[in-house]
Length: 275
Length: 313
Image 1 (cartoon, chains in turn brown, green):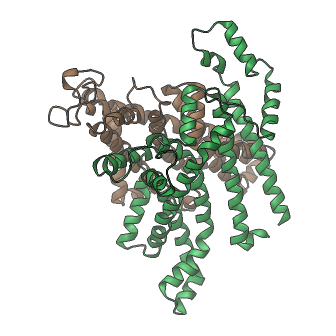
Image 2 (image 1 turned 180 degrees about the vertical axis):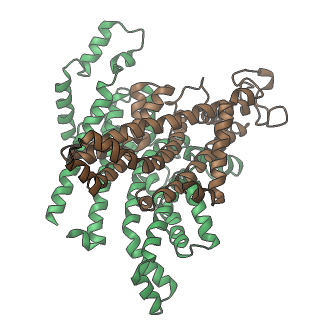
Image 3 (image 1 turned 30 degrees about the vertical axis):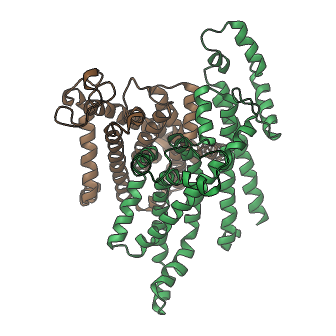
């Protein structure tokens, strides 16, 4: 039912195909990449895209296409992991706030306070405290997107807990943990899937911004973000160093947003207004 | 109405206190001793102790916390470690640029997003509407710093229409200043105009389905009057919310944009503070920027009272 409504729209199909392609390309980067992404060849520095190097070479003569494939691995992993971390934390916070009335006010104000920091500023501050590394980027961005998830989860939980079947279950002696597990969590899945898709997209953008500012993933591990960051110093001579990773980000994020929009429409038309 | 106001202002104060607490937690409790980071690996333990005492880091946590809140109440954010200025002076001297940039970009985003959003809703099936919706998703998918770099590449380096970076000489006049800000504002406005466009479209679609719109059409009013006067006026509340939200997002976006364009604003100050571990500046900036965000939200809520009298009840 969901699949049919998704697959009837050409743009969504295109989005899904691009995502599949990106995922496969990153998964099989090892066999797809024509060159070792870290291998320097000083004789072949800064060569324009051509037959030998599809997307040209960088300032150390490394093959941009191969680096792009391996960078995709990290950028996509960051996106997925951030979505998982923030969905986990956000669900815990949101269910507690929505289900237990006494916790609602303090937790909701905490969510408000976390939302008061502009995303990128909070991420930068956390990275300043943690120090730049791949896992710290995941933790920092996971925390940044937690309140968004928590807000949605809280709203859905508050509606669910008042429904007659939950009330019936409660009057038959079911405890809160049982009700949350059996009645609330399954109903959270559709909105969480939608939120997860969007957070995946935002996290890829945010990672690239953090790496660009020099507080993200250190350049020894290429991500699309830090490839742009290195590319910018050479962009007058070698704009391909910057254009290709940027296009990879734009394509991926665009596809994710298309799919996210479609999922939202397909799963719950009422949710359309909440994001 | 007074009750609404008191409750709203009360919860704003609570959120501000929590913000201050979170900033304290981020900068003090999380592993990584600022003194050790500042001194580097060559420091002796005595140096570290002296520095910790200088910043009051040797006091127990609760007294550091109370001191921090006390400082904030007096609007005292301490001194920068590197700049030889108080945090407030450092932020204040750079605020004008960031405020101009943010307002410029918000204005652009509204000018692009609102009309296109209205158009996209009014002629749902038309080609303009489709293009506008596509722009709405595309604009939110490109990293804004990348857009900035590409804009510099083509409009500054190749065509020479705009300066590559900076904010001109210190005594530059307003037109020169604005000229320096055109490309940064465009880069900053693009993702946000997409957001405004999408919200305007959704809100308009909802309103245009109402009975009174059919009535307005039935009594023979022209399409412009129906869509803009009857429709947009009632679709305004969510649009106002998102414009406020945009203003707040832009403060964050300005951090990245100012770095791309080498503009000496608040964002640039924050980034260099983070790279140099200038903790007082990071703390102060976090508190002030998020307080600004909370106050913008309060202002939007108060605007509701004015736009929609039903909220007063």
